[in-house]
Picture 1 (tube, rainbow, N blue to C red):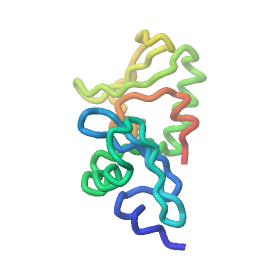
Picture 2 (cartoon, rainbow, N blue to C red; picture 1 turned 135 degrees about the vertical axis):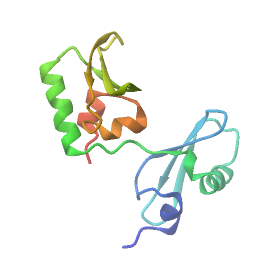
Picture 3 (cartoon, rainbow, N blue to C red; picture 1 turned 180 degrees about the vertical axis):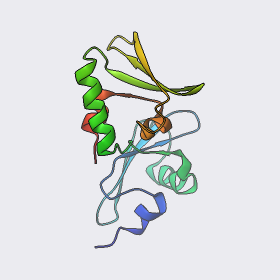
Picture 4 (tube, rainbow, N blue to C red; picture 1 turned 135 degrees about the horizontal axis):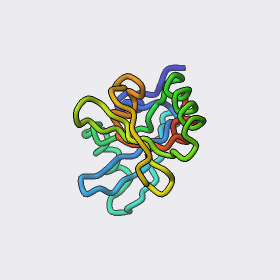
Length: 139
């Protein structure tokens, strides 16, 4: 079965949960079903679901998808978790070259990995993720 047209227009996959972020920072959850129905869970209740859908169609750049981690990124995250058990979070910092900062569960700095631009390419777009999110978020 082909993907419903609305999923193509929004640039999402069927069954994928995404967020639509308004300009004021509030968000709505959107999911396209196999039959083309769109489920919108309004978190702000400030506009109708139809208005949210229209805005999402007109502003697809405001649709936020969960990152899709590659198997290689997942394996690297598992290795970091084994080698540095105290590290819980990775953050991408682009100062001089590409650097990944490592933090514990209380957000205390625990070290960095330098010049590893291709190690976690997905992290460049979202800037920060927990190791558990990376390990559990493989497609």
